[in-house]
Image 1 (cartoon, one colour):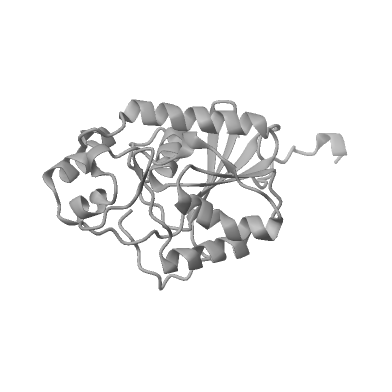
Image 2: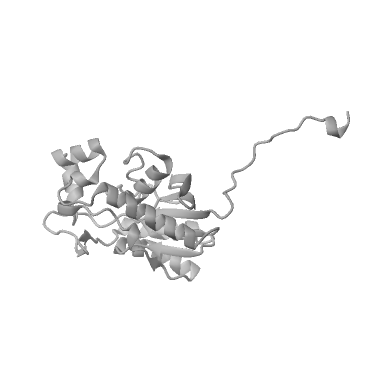
Length: 231
């Protein structure tokens, strides 16, 4: 049979990101210090700002070891120190200085800042029940409006992806931010991706306002003996 008459074959191939897409690694900070009713976390711009717990520092080192052989165009952290402390081991390995991105700070919890959210969830508070049932942060008194939170996360990710078009960035951020970013990318329920593990890695490709998820809650690099905090 002449080659021209041979049937055309369409093989499956590995995923290839669209030209110009930016790979965004969303890394949740390591486990932070335990919350206590008699010793609220210090606040930064009205938001709880605990340091990392000992297990969180170990998780930060494990993240640094996992990603230390990769190339990044930039490392980003938020205004809250738990992200700075989590990024530090990787930044040392790569000789890079993380850049602060305020738009990717955690959702503001209003009256439940300073560690109160953990206590309310542990106590099965009625407002906490409603928060999970309705999948809205703003049922908490004084909390950031859910639409406003979604808009600022989307704006920040779109802007950073455009700045590093075709490249790769690591963003050290928070559980609520990661959940929002992935829910928006998939059209899922708002809390569908809530509570990624501390020190976990989730992966997005961003091109303009479009996003594709290539990984969620990667934890193979972590010591799973560490306790799992509520937030």
